[in-house]
Image (cartoon, rainbow, N blue to C red; front, side, top):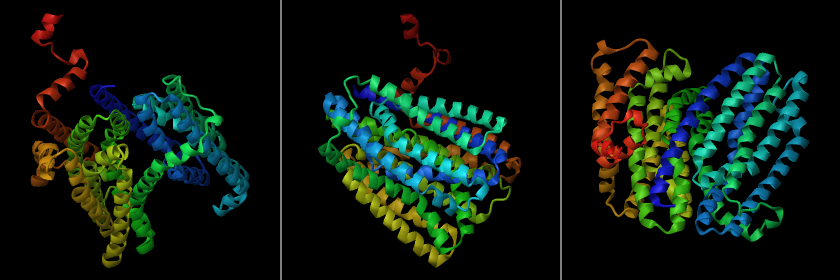
Amino acid sequence: MTYDSVKQNIWSNALSNYLRTFVGIIVGLVTFRLLYQSMPQESFGFWSLLWSVFGYGILLDFGFGFAAQKRVAELSVTREWDKLSQVLSTILFFYLGVAVLMATTVALGSDEIVRAFGVSEANHEEFRIVLIAFFAAIGLAFPLGIFPEILRGQQRISTANNIITLAMLMRLGVIAWAVYAGWGLLSIMLTALFFALAPDLVSAFFALRHMPEVRLRPSLFSKSIMRQTMGFSIFAYISTATNIVLGKTDQLVLGATLSIGAVAIYQAGAKVAEVFSQFTRQLQDTLSPAAAHLHATGDHAALRDLLQRSTRWSTIIATPLYLLCAFELEPLLQVLTGDPHIAVETWQVAQVLLFWFYSTALTHSVSKRIYMMTGHERRLMWLGLGEAVLNLALSIALALIFKNVVSVAVGSLIPSLFFGWFLLWPWVAKDVSLHPWHLFRETVLPSWLSCVPAALVLAAPLLFPGLQIENTWLRILVMGSAGGLTALLCLWFGSLTLEERRSLRSRLPSRFTKKTPTALQAA
């Protein structure tokens, strides 16, 4: 696979990421509303509690999912199918062992667990069965989850995304019918779990069909392969765990040092930043398998170009979205929280967290994904641990000193700025053979300058109060359209090269592009 093919895959995969994310947000919101209105309060609370646990299931991944993705990308290049069969069989059957252990442990302690949650006697037995089914499904999600990782390693992320997107839409339809038919918690949970696991089974068909030489058998389980895989996966696991710490530390600090009410203020302010993060990381999520593939081929020049080019595109995507969110933060918070009056502290927290996510989009998101797949996982682990420790220490200290929510958010922002701009950024600059300022001038500054007109458009209502729009939805629509179109035009002519504009035009359907004289002659 050539570097041009790799770049083409990155863009198609990124577009499918955006589609999956958009559908996921819509399906999540509609499902939440359906179940919130139809379920008894205790049933809905138990449902929400279990699915919140699902998000922490990644801590039991042990980094092997990342390892599978990396090894598929590398060994596919060299066509070492026997070794790849050993690697994947070892990971798969290790996960099966974890699944059996988890399901057995929860089943044996299910009565005590349900009682610990304070479930009423009337619902005790049903909730106990729901609990067992849920954790059995979580267990199965580990071995089955290897198949979407194989597709990612094959740089067929769009295939995995299309399967997941279709499953989400089907799940919404079935759950809507279940609510209409008056199904109970157990039936609805089993339906949701089926559609959570089904995409992995379908992914298995497409992943293995693309590698007919690969075999998955218990006899191929290898302790030596396990040790070799652990050499990478432990660093990937620690890096993933530190990312979770960075994302969840603030809430724990607030609960311990201030109050539960402070956590609510923080959560309200974090909503816009979280949505912003979802929409700005989709391109970066496609870089890991591409980097592993290029690293395996030994194409270091392509890797350097990927690192620099991806940083530039990350800035192009994130900057206009950041400006829109920063200037229109109050109406966005009103829409996401449903609160017509946003407290000043909530707005301040949201601004700090938004800038934190924007800065990491420029400094962390590209470099960490590429370096993790190119032999730098140990150094990334130490940087992640250092940032997590400093984040925790600074957040606690500022919370105790200033006794407010904003100080905790600032305690997370400062380490991110330091590690991003003073450690990661010079590392990237050295690898692409540029001075840090020259790297900034080539990748970040053009987008900043191009977005100045959009910033002026978005700032107009602040400078001229008569332009203020009272209706929240109308304001977001009008200002978002005005600022977005201005940014799009300015980035098109100010940041993109002529070659890039031609490449993007070629991806548009023919009815949206005019035929050039050369094309007309060729026709």
